[in-house]
Length: 262
Image 1 (cartoon, rainbow, N blue to C red):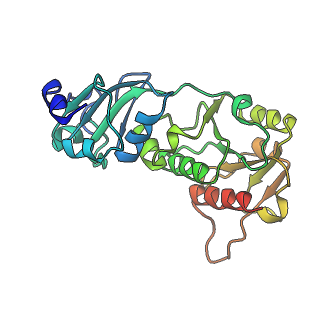
Image 2: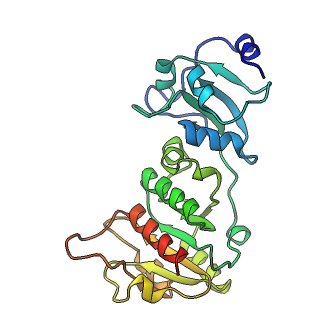
């Protein structure tokens, strides 16, 4: 659609969010994304159902490609967009409201490909960490990430922003029981490696030639006993004694790099 047509079709100011200033909230079943990479990736995702895009003209100009002529778009001022997202969120002139992605099932995405490990997160609740792990999963070709329904962040603008577009490309499997998911992976031929700082073996010593699953626990608590018991082995990263541990998203990135370069 030509710029002139878009100007005529869309007028007014951005709507106010129902969740209150600075919360980035929206109605149940919907998610509000912001920033160029998350919004652009969501717009290109055929599995994503969009509701409305609020944007500055500069934000629209930064997107790769043209929006369909009938796309629900409303131009807005920077200050208006700031009221629609989490406080101080870097929206870059783009805020997209869309429906949440449909949940994937483990057997749909865990194909047993040795080059595509599965990443399981045991009660990792920080949305920035989950988003960063999604980004690393995309970078190193992981098959999916797996979290529990509870004790994990929901799909959100914070996760999407930290994932820098990977929320739209890496399947996110949510399960009721993480131990049962590990059993299913074992039955499918995956070697399950639990990352634990106290382990004797290093990750390099523990990786198989075939399909593998990397299990990471929350910072501080680490893997729960029951989850560790459902792993085939525990492994550590060979960090020095100068530091006690790494951030879970950093550990995930290193583990995925190691898996990719076996």
